[in-house]
Length: 211
Length: 143
Image (cartoon, rainbow over all chains, first blue to last red; front, side, top):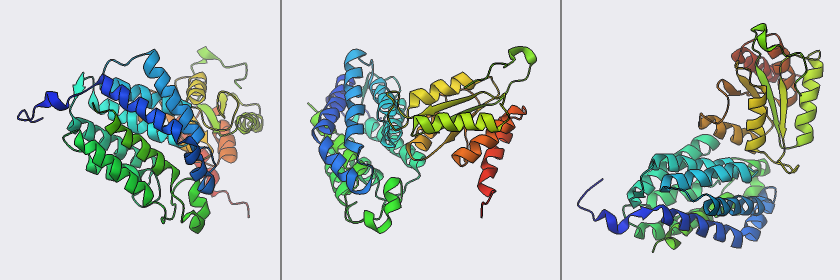
């Protein structure tokens, strides 16, 4: 960590992470019908409902047992998603947040760069777990450009949200190579991937949490 | 699905088998079928199917409960159907402290693999042998 940078100005404390995850939960709630619509085109029409249930559990858990550090907040959220979502996105998002949380350790505050590095580790873990590559029409197509755009200041959060949105949109012409949508082959082309779409919602919520 | 006669003090620890499916009924049936085809079986078998509220899906909680219930200290062979069942078990294994020591995700077809796993586990074989026997079910062509 460079000491020339006024770390205090951009320090992210536990309440930042609570705001981020709560904003993500609200966004998923707002967009649930759209996520399910996208999933009914190429999946099993449950992504919105699943994500809504998972993130509602995250918001509730954050309120009931307030975490003591940024890392603990992400681990708590990841655990809720794995146990409550009930679809493949549960273990994938759960792994993303839990791995990122473990990377942050028990520091009371972290820098944007540390968050960026932790999320990169989380996204790598998702890639390993799901075995997908960029261009396979999965959440990675939104998450990878997002973590590329993340950097040393909170202004990069906005850029990451935009990169994730662009990545999600870019899944439309792709042929699905992973998950249930891959059974559709060519028929998966022309639809936006629901997982990439929900990934973009979660990344976009980062900038909303900045004060 | 654990049958009576598990003899804690016989010194023989058997590999446990967990059957994971998106459907509670499928998981229960496969677990019962495997036990029956294993001749009543002695290896502990548990189903972890569907969500806790009885819906279709995968439950980390049910999988963890089942794995600890069948764990005798010799490892646990976990058979899965598809999609989120595979990913959930992989995610649990990747976290290291979530499942009993010696837990393995078995790469095998669910029904045939479960039968092979329970038969093999009931002989007192170790977890690698049980996993290997289940995986061999892929090589058994039907046509």
